[in-house]
Length: 398
Image 1 (cartoon, rainbow, N blue to C red):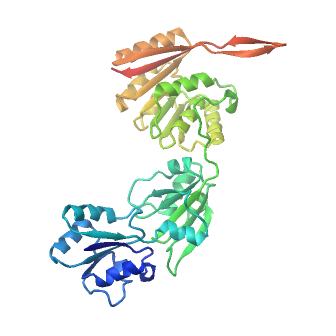
Image 2 (image 1 turned 90 degrees about the vertical axis):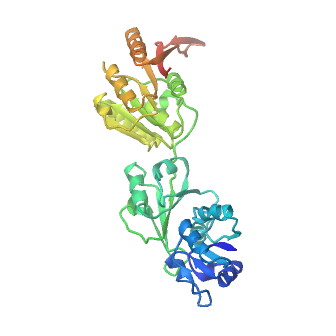
């Protein structure tokens, strides 16, 4: 019998009576050095500082018939290596059982005297993690940290994205005599150092307001820069078929109204708003701050040159190119030949040029005209006042 045991904070006292009994009875014990160091003297002397499944299986094969215990920090069901050993054990027909432990999230919640059922749980221990994307959608996010990602590096990413005022706290050496809780904003904690055994809780009270695309025009800070209107924005996002983790470009972003809508539609992705007009760039910054779209980056420059260093897009909205449409399309398709493209046009000449440019590059050009009229009160009457027709030209790969 192989028993997989969650050892919580690593102290012998943290184990259940069942787990303690299994360790005492085991002829072989595996685990990290830190965990083995906490075992009492009555446990077997055949202890191995191993935790990789292949190494454990090789040692087990050399001691047939021996019961074994494998120790893991935290809980066996919470981002633990236990699952990686269970599968090969079962495949080999070796009987196994699991005794869970107290996880770091439980230890932190207990230290704070708070429930944790509403926290979003994320691991940044040895895996890619985007804290901005996680904190965009949840008010309270718990991060396991380790390796290259520490509480400080995660807080630095948040601060760099504009989320430096988010409330944060770090739990160090939880469940041990050296336990400590350190509080501060993300910006403050970004400049500090922490114990290797640390976890991070971020509580962001400025979570963006997610809703169906098509915010009212008056929601945006506008100035004198032309803005894509509500109905057109909603239709453009539908044509682009935005997914939550998409990388998106908004070329000729103007006030940033489309960029904001894209960022809210893709909270786990990223939006690059490309604009060369200084007044428009100022408005994009203001609207980014107003809507808390921390996954939106302003690229100041003229397309297509400004597109050179951007990551490959999944979808692109083109609101204006100042005559550089051909170069913009070439830049988009060079990065991703299957990118979804939507171009807005007012003039018939732009419509014709966009359709021809898409067709020449092997895309089918679908054209939709939007003619929106809005009511205007005239005394006791309401009259419909027409806006200029807008064309949306969508590039679809054949």
